[in-house]
Image (cartoon, rainbow, N blue to C red):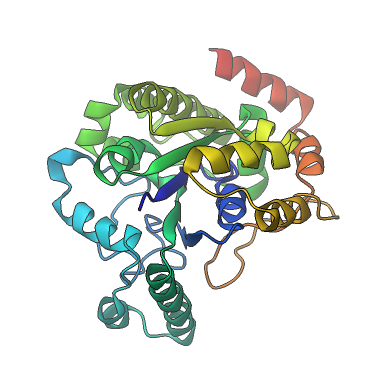
Length: 300
């Protein structure tokens, strides 16, 4: 059965998109198996492989352990013993029960795996070619993306990309980030990451028919219509149940201005929201001067 991968830079709407695709009941949601940080990452029950970098690069040249591990993941085979060897805290045991149950029931009932993983972005071609995934790459407006990262105080450490020779070889645009190693201008670095990721995503989509680029803003502006198209593209059934759940989740009242936080045992950032309101609020997180600078840097 064909697995689905939803990826894109963090804060590009991957959790929301993944949850909406899983709303029809045909997918088992798997959150960020390539996250190098524990909770949600570092779960060998979900992915029995050692993640060493953010945006870990996987390609056919050295994919032995990755192919074995991800074949288990997309086949919904949970590795209970591997999980217990590493994680035994109460939270970890509760997560093991949840994921182990979801994987087992999903496999027995013929469901497919859905991987929601921003850190798989640069490896999306491998997921499409070697694992047969239908891949959705979310691309967000650069001002909204940079504003979200600025508000959260996030930055990127480019050495984690540049230390991966195969990544630099296969995606030469990454080499352009080298002069910014050690740079303290967070906004400049965030925009540079956006530019590189957007170029890589466009190249991957051009070379792999199994990869679809989706603008977050288009999806947020018309979520029911947008997700209906994504269901069709991913080979999912657009049922009354799916439409109802998507409609309710994307018209939830309340502001999106609350701080980012992980939720639930899956440690996802997704929360029901009014997607059109979220779209309108996203542009207000930077000053006019900062937004103008982002636009200039994006064009440059």
